[in-house]
Length: 510
Image 1: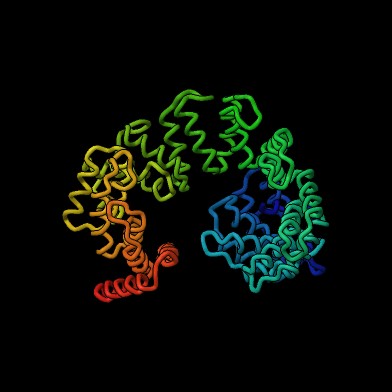
Image 2: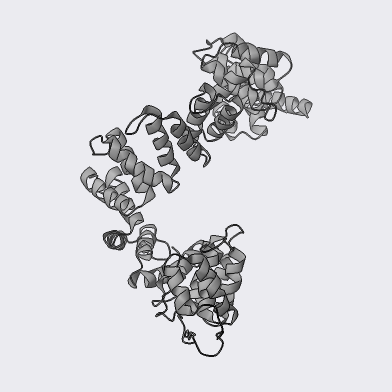
């Protein structure tokens, strides 16, 4: 949270050498276009541009508080463009005059690292100089750096000490942080009683992340007696405090009538809007669902697509899949296969179980060539085949006949496992052998399992050992475990024969 623009009455300096602001003393321009009171009045009245222009004269004259104020405005983009480097330059000047508030703000700027990388080392130096009970925020931030080791060597014990100092000084975030340190035994002996004490103290004082933690504990029963009423009470408090994660959960619960609340779609949407506008991807996706279905709002495909895209652009797989399907169907926008593919690929990369099959369908239909990711095309088409897409098996057969070893492996897997395609042991073994002999390690392991089970071949532990040994030599830990299990059932002569055959195959392969 950024520091507030300090009022004129506050001569902010958190060290003994703090520089008091004077309007007529040495170092302040006598012919300034604006007095400091006028600068402050412009800021408070909302004329940030005039305030920013006016404060520059005092900053250039060497006034530390003016330099701090100007750094604040540059760092926040108030009254003009955001200028991180300019903020750093002016704040460093103020810090050189022992301006403690500038040191704290400068540390925050260095920690933010946007658009450049964070400078944890310099932030740590600044915080070290001012951290203590009088500046609990600095102690809290430095404690976090020491816990993670980002500013140098990690020091969990000192990190705990600083977190405790900040917590005892009333810093709510530090109280929550101290609860976590006690709970995990980080820098201090693990102590559940102390963890609970500080957790409740922070939550009771209004720290939303602590309130959300209590909701999660009471809701799941993890470390707490499961109590939906208490869970809901803490969730409401966190949501009313404006905590986005809580607004998302409470809004979703109202939308669907879950989590101990009766369905109230209008209230649910209201909470979801608040969370979505804070950038919570899950809330954006659920808001897209509300507009898509007309639940709690007027049905609106255009707004549904907008919210799905907002969430998808943050990498949320289910939102990406929804956006892709809308583009494919021409809902909320003109049909656009290229955009549909883009979002299906985001969804697939995020683990959506259906996106790959939809991509496979588009490949089989000729609407998508996957030229930029040809190695993934067979897998997508195999997923489409398993989902029942017409022509998908034929596409894989054609690729296999052209020498695509992965297509052979995927066909083997389909013929072995897919009820949609139809199991066929003979075809499964034929394709799996080709893939295994081509060096595809999962196929080699599968051949070993086929021989051990007698699936599509006569049961043969020697051959099972051979193929799992080959796969193990190619880096499969699972194959090594199976090979050793098979060896326990074999005679020494059988093991020797299997090892000889595997060695011969590996030598030939090299």
